[in-house]
Image (cartoon, rainbow, N blue to C red; front, top):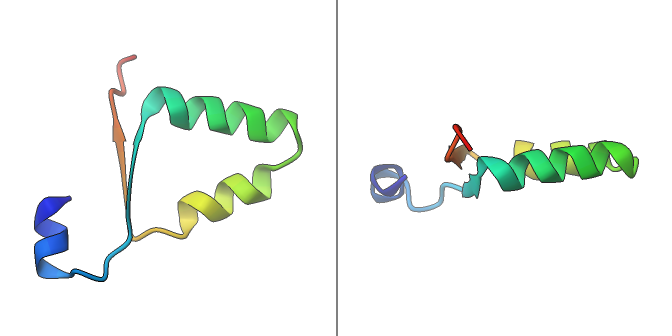
Length: 54
């Protein structure tokens, strides 16, 4: 992520834990907000998901 910012300071980077990503996904589906979820994560240039093995 840092290297990407150095080469392109305008880039949109989102860093999220896998647990948060999963919880947000499940909640958005249950609550009928899937479009909002997709829009949030599709509106970035680089998505970093940490702790995949949680």
